[in-house]
Image (tube, rainbow, N blue to C red):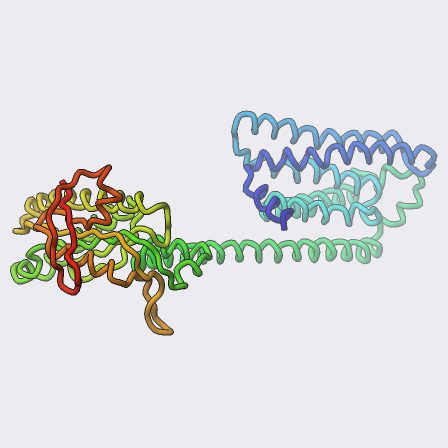
Length: 427
């Protein structure tokens, strides 16, 4: 898998870098092979070693040229899209010369050429592969025409001229058709593989696009932290019920019910959507979990599913609430400039305490939420808070009071809470 991943990374390289890497592998290998082949041919009495040696040397040259040009392109930061096509043109011509020198219808290069073309297609792209096929067929056709017309001699590398018997219609028909069929079938398999890979890449890109759209939609319906935990594979964090100390912030608009009677439904929807958009953006900035958007109320808590420490949770909750109050003032000005008779205030209650956190609901539909007395206390503080202010409990003040200026508000007897609650106004 590591090798496959590495190949996928190399596949995204510029064409010039691909050619450099290919030549850095092929050139040394061919140079060593050329020396060995030429040395072993010393005792041969059927080869014209002078022509054979020139052809071997030419094979090294046709690899050096693309390497130098590609290095220059890499140094200049150029893509070099034309460089891959230079290989079939030069190296393909060299292979064709080898086939011509040994005899078109007897040489092993008839099998080597398809292999080389397949490497070009896989490494440099299908278009380069097709260009290699064209160079092969065009080169062989040209050589055969020149041989048939007497311009070129058949198999000039061979001293034994008994090989001329191969250059006959029957031999060409039996050997040439087989070679051409092998070539086309070999490359057809590569085309199928490349086409399948291209189709898979297109399907994968489409799947990624759909996944991105789904992720965006998920984040609109559930808290951002919960969505990120699920998408990261940490769904157990939000599935299990737990008792955890949270700081809960409950905010509600003052006079919203009266405003619903004054505004048209379209204007009401516009105001409410802008309000929630701005408030949730602020909550996300402070890494708060927006648990509920109900009517005109917002319930946000700190301490789940992401945890830092209790003091940090309380301080961020109060700072978030202050930014929300300031943002509401700017929204009122914006709505007024838009011709809407809207002037909203928000009451905010904040409490710190232990709550049950996790998924609640049915087998087929659940909701990540916080439940318990601490959540109810934050909601009750909100109802007692003066419009445009923030009211925090004594537990929150103990944690955040050293960093946020507060003034005593007194003891409050809240509905559903047995004991009086000491509260503080955030200045």
